[in-house]
Every structure is written in C-alpha cells, then in structure tokens.
Length: 240
Image (tube, rainbow, N blue to C red; front, side, top):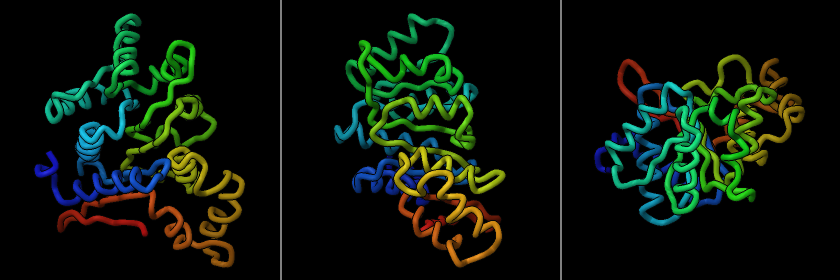
C-alpha cells in the first residue's frame, strides 16, 4: 500500500510514525483538503496493526464522512477489522464495539454519536477502556474548549491522539491552542491563560518581547505537519 502513495502522503505517514516512535502523545495532520489525509491515516494504521504496535483505535468524524471512511478502509485494507458505532440499532452498535474491544480493530463513529454515548465508548464492563489511538477527522470541531463536542472527546481515554484538519485556524489563535491542547494532552502550550499571555497577545499585537510566531513554530514543529496546494503543484511545509 505504501508504494501507491504520493511523496507528500508518504511524508505524512512517516510523520505519524515518528510521533509514535518518539513517544509523543499526539499531533496534527493539517494538509489542505484533497491531499489525502484519509489515505495517510489508513496507511499508518495498517502498518501499525501489521507490526502489532497497536490494538484498538477510535475514529471520530462528522456523520457525513462515516460511509466514505468505511469504503476507503474496505478498498485499501480489507483484512483489517473495522466496525461502525453508528446507526439506529443500539444492539448492533454495542456488538461492534464489543468485538473490537475484546479482540482488536478500529471503531468508526460520529461526533453526534459520541456526544450521546461517550460513557459507553470510554469503558468496557464498567471499567475504563483506554484506546491506543483516538483520531478526529474535521478536528476543528473542537476549536471551542467549552462546547459539548470538545468535552466529550476529552472524556475518551487514549494513549495517543491524532487530529486531521485542513483548517487548523479559522478565526483566532485560541482555536489552534485548543487543537494542540487536545492532541498533546496539555503538554505543549500550557493553559489557555498562559497561551494567551505568552503567545496570542504578543503575536496579535506584532510584538516580539515575549513571544513570536517563530517561537511558537519551534514549539509546535514536532507535532504538526501541513502540506499545501499551489497552482504549480504540491509542496510540503514542515513546521520545524
């Protein structure tokens, strides 16, 4: 499968593997829309399962993307156990979740389903269940720390977290803090208050006495990968 990827996609898979190898709690894959974030994640997970480095993955996305992800997994990795925690049948959802938790595999669900069932997804037999990876597609859904979606994704125990988004910053730098805080499990940019004082305010006011965009770039570089499209083709932008 790896041989069928474009160069920028192979770089994305390598980035995700380095995060895992280096013991990072998570990161953000922020390629522009249309550059294949889905296939990069599938290739990464396929390799990780083949190497027996992981057993349980929870993939969360907007409802409209569930069928597309299922189809892509079926196309590229038909031997991988992929179950959906979705649809109107509670019994079927529970069976699918139990199969993956008992053995191994990937559970695909939606943000709305997560909001309504986060306790079930966070436990097994009334005990906390820790996923190897929680992966969010369209991760800008958690740009607001106080909304219900954000609170529910934080409630799911995970050893590693990966965020996928083509629009990591839509309105202000605090949205970026929210993404990094979740992905890095609070280990990178401090609290929201600290981030505002040390990064957001100085950058917004174009001051350099306390922090600069360059300083934040250095901090975030090892947990962030972004590939952009241009009229002349595709180029990778590694923030280092």
